Every structure is written in structure tokens, then in C-alpha cells.
Length: 215
Image (cartoon, rainbow, N blue to C red; front, side):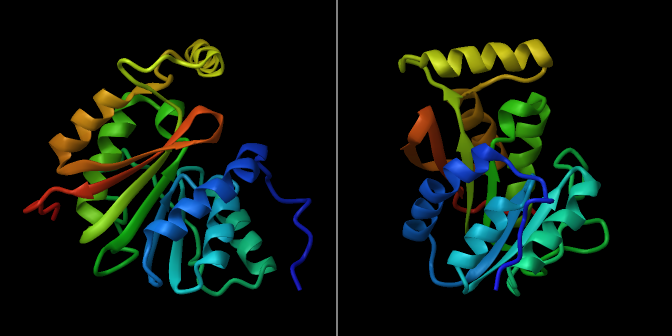
């Protein structure tokens, strides 16, 4: 029986968007595989997706080391055996797993939600390069969040959100999808799917370009 979670970190946004994202993952992914999550935060996505995808092994990571034991505790209380111990990971570090790869043979999925706009632009570049290094040739990078797009009107909510982010830190802000696509292509990824999501978000699926070798 699942234990109470009231004393663990909780993100209302993660709670709202986990089901729409999960529905997309269920349609996209095969029955089994190895997943790496970047910036797992509270761990709500990690445990929800691992529970719904029992054939998958989920590796949570977080740049804030203090959140890692709390993610582990969330998985423990739910009795999940397919969630690995959370690891500290900063995408800007030249080696994501200095003590050895979390998955020796690479990952079938790298998942990253709501990071690119709450981080410096260098994190976008680093995410794409790291994904190429750690994805299997048939693997996918999935990113989720709000974006700006050329020729697509920006919703009032996203416009205000962008302003609030830049007021908090001028290095933050919603990213132009065209800029993200350019950086991804330079790293060795192509945009395979653009899926509109609730609340003016996008779920993007990136695939390695043919012949890309990130090692």
C-alpha cells in the first residue's frame, strides 16, 4: 500500500501535466527500455511514469543533490522497483556520470521537462550534446515545456511567464523553437515530433541524425 507523501516536495505543475505527458509516452515508447530523466525535481514524474511503464527502468537525476534522497523516498513509499537511486547531474558538467555511466549501453529515452526556460541558454546546448552522447542509436530525447515559435502567436500566459522569468534572472526565459532546433541539429539531433499540449506547452521528440556518434 502506498504511503503518504505530504512531507515530500510537491509541484502542482508536475501534478497537472503528468497525465497528458504520460499519454504521449505510452503512445511513443515500446514496452521496455532504459530511461534517463534530467532535472527530476520532486520526482513526481519519475514515479508516475515508472509505475505506468513497468517494463522500463527509470533513472532520475537532479542538479540539487539534496533532492535526490527525497526522490528515492517517494519511489520507496510507492514500492517501485524499477526506479534507480537518484543521482546528482548537472547538464553543464563535461561528464554526466564521472563514476561510470548509469546505463552501460546507453538510454532508450532521455526525458527533460521544464528545464530549458528556467536555466541559462548554455544548458540547452549542453542537454543536446549530452543526449547524443548517452542515447542509443534508436533512442529519443523528449522535452516538454513552453516555447516561442516564429509565425505562431504567443499566448498571453506564455508572454507574461516569459517576462516573469527574465525579471527573476535575465539568463532565463522561453526559448525559440527554431533556436533549439538549430542547436539540436548541430549536436546531432533532429526534431521528429512536435506535439501541442495543454496550457500552451509542447512535447518535442528528438532523434539522433543518421550516422551520429556521440561517443
